[in-house]
Image (tube, rainbow, N blue to C red; front, side, top):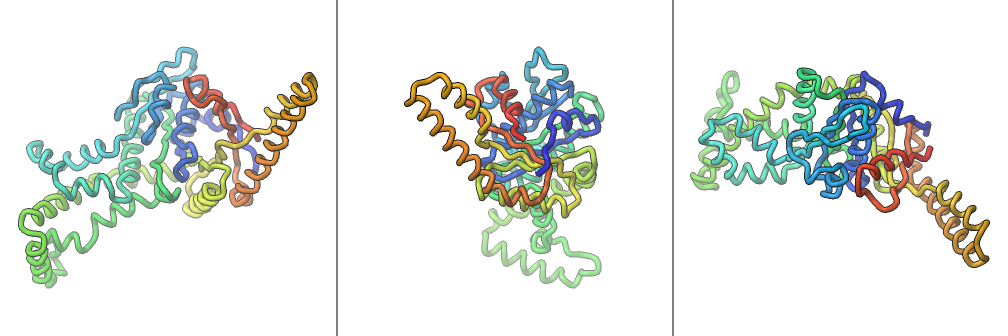
Length: 362
């Protein structure tokens, strides 16, 4: 893998959207915040969108918590500015769906059992809402000039490919022929299907009961309108994702599972013609720091201390070598890469976030 200069990437003024993608548990949320902070230090006007951040991350950024709307992060010495927000999927989905009905119907829709099931459990909802938020922030940035870079922490999932595939699943559900039968929509050249639709509707009514079937039909009508509203912006957002104004950073951890997921995602991004900028291998064992410490202690300590330090150094070297073997599926793809070491003591404040991006081992 060829090395990448992160500062050089963040300095690129034409880069307006940076997405951290990868499987869950590899540190996407923390890296997204750290990259946004570094970009602000370099003079960019940044907003970072995080998904389900740990409370300690918000506190490290000097905030009591993260809201659904962008909140300024105090950076007294930065050349640029940083806003941070948490994508509240349920809140955003509420807004999208209830915007399609009169205000007096909104509460009834939110109480609808089918709506609750879809908004909380359907695979694709998080990804669809994230895509819509990207488009919304991009339009706001263009209109106001408040930001010149949007950094996105994509939703956590078992598969790194879910962020790319999730929205299409929600669209497919909205346009499912069965859904249209339930709504009684077949018309025009397929008018002969109307009798079948009516029979299906009566059968579902009998199976579910009048009230429950009414809930289903009401929800599906609102849901279809909401997805159509989403789709009005989808083409614009997808065009931006495929342009040189965007960049995808594939985040992996030095373990076999995440490395294989990352490799599959790299191949998918290349196949789809999306702008892959680099792979970030996070949480690596950094041998160089241990090496200097080992030499310093070994030169000035008693024999036992020398033995313990050098033994620790040997274990660290072996662990680093094992990690490099684990990420070979990614290494073979020859993608620009950055290896980022762990931050001793964890993330407690802005300085620790700054040190995270600084712990780069090429």
